Amino acid sequence: MRIQDYRSLVRFSDEKMTKVNLYESAKMFADLYCLKPGQEQKVHSHENEDKVYFVLEGRPTATVGESTYQLEAGESCAAPAGEPHGVRNDSEENAALLVMMAPHPRPPGS
Amino acid sequence: MRIQDYRSLVRFSDEKMTKVNLYESAKMFADLYCLKPGQEQKVHSHENEDKVYFVLEGRPTATVGESTYQLEAGESCAAPAGEPHGVRNDSEENAALLVMMAPHPRPPGS
Image (cartoon, rainbow over all chains, first blue to last red; front, side, top):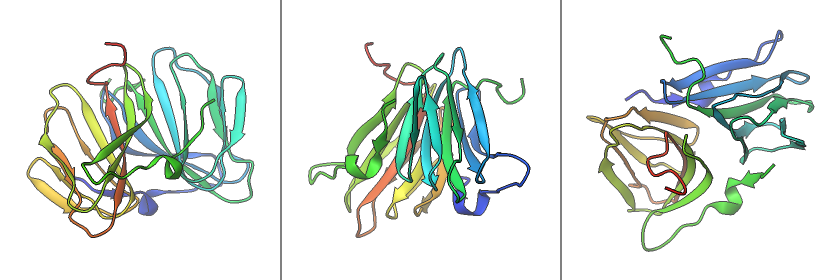
């Protein structure tokens, strides 16, 4: 069994939002998204995949459809397939989210 | 957008481990598993679904395949399809996990 502590894996880059994979298969992925202040993943959508955001640290701002909210640690939201979504860090502290997507849009080995 | 704070959703029952759904579709589910001391989800397996455990609170003990470890908040592990897995709370404090599975073994509406 591979045990991973997210606190030892989060990695913040001055350049752009960082993704750290925790688990992936053709069925799903679970990533850490690490955003320094001012960084973002622009609003986009996936035709066939659902995504769930779960905030681990900080105050990231999520957009799903027409709604945009600043979240805090312990809060989650979801973007069903086809729904535009994105996340940015408008706060002054680092933000880390657990992001799950199913199925995997680019399965490993594909 | 539906925002959910897991801390207001966790629910511990004297009777058995409690599951609280955060999101579900045919593609996946994200649940909270809430275990009082001594409670468990017995080791089982799913032929076609992957599961990821992410510990939010407490010290739950996870089994995947032949391995069993006591985890702590921030730690995660995964059980690919076909791999026996389960979780129990051998500690003296409540434990809460975020559990993701894909695809959904019993899709809503099925």
